[in-house]
Image 1: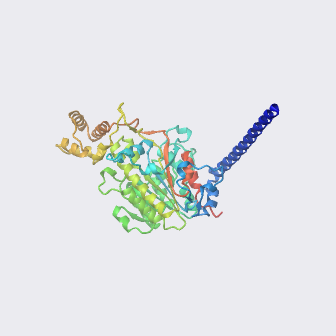
Image 2: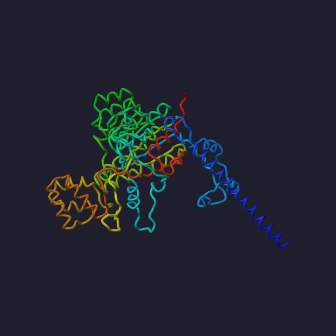
Image 3: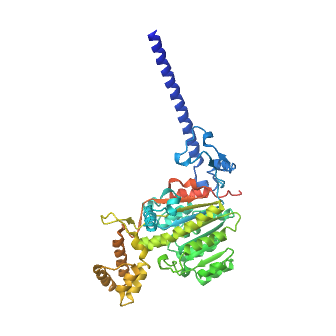
Length: 500
């Protein structure tokens, strides 16, 4: 009897274990099938990306809007993060699954150290908490930036912008042409084919490498006049930034004959109510934010662009670039860089508010590459002192210009930087002052770096990955790690299909 009971018990345990294993295998097989379906669903082929939908399931789900969902009724094999279940009821978003409008914002040269430094730069020292910035709030992923193999691992702005505009790698210096110098179709050209409006708002010259890759094709980024002329054929609805020196009177006349309103004063923006507009507000770059008493230029350009482009019921695609973050990085100028970061953050918040209100606009923010190898802390010292930057009220270049032209330069320097220079610092500045404005500017930046304990590894670009930020319908597509070409192909896939 005892033997029979023991055998029965062993048999029962064996059967239970087998059933459990079989059930687990079924569940794993089911999960693998779903993973494969999801992977195939979001696959994007560059050759036909403009006509490929990668959110079909989302389109179906969007039809069931404003419904209350009880998490307890969800299928057992769907697991939600604990932090996402705040209560029993979860509201499904009423936003559409595909955007009507898209805004891509590029912080030129804005590697991850820049957004981290900006967080500490904006921190309120009177609170225990380090406050979040817009970058912390919108972070969704990372992106690699390397160019075509012929140019190695470190990209320039032209190659990276081409990747972001067309979905293809190319050589450094190329403006939306491939390694054989053949034109590559950009997202702006695709948008125009589908009846959407297009525009750009930048703080560099409008025909600089990054915006150029979205609106022109050229074998080299330095062909500024040719690129400016190509803008005439781009049919862009809004062109706002600097670059007056590259637009001849003859070219400007061709723009006005084509229906463009040409303006050169920032105040004239208030009287622009309809596209098309060509606004060139500086010979080359717009003023450094730290030197600009009026301020908020990129935010203003962004807001005006949204107002004008949104008049098209079909939708629009806009590129906004904080161009001068990169220029400050090339100079290893932390004070000027934080000023440019602050205004780029303001412009992001302008678009973020538009996204909230419209509910049909996708915003994707990234950098084209990292510049300068910024280090938050240096020299073996565990410290970074951004509070010093808040008292600096002019760019090092402007400070140097003022110091060259005055005898009482020591007092002027202290007033500009907001601290009392040491005898050693004054001696360094005195020597540099005799060597000219350029050397004096470098010495001022070195003093600021030492005071704040800021480090740099290069005056060029580095190959580090950059961050990706997003909000609005379709923003989840940009989560996790991706190549910069994938940012382009994902955005292209969200364009409306052609009528063909």
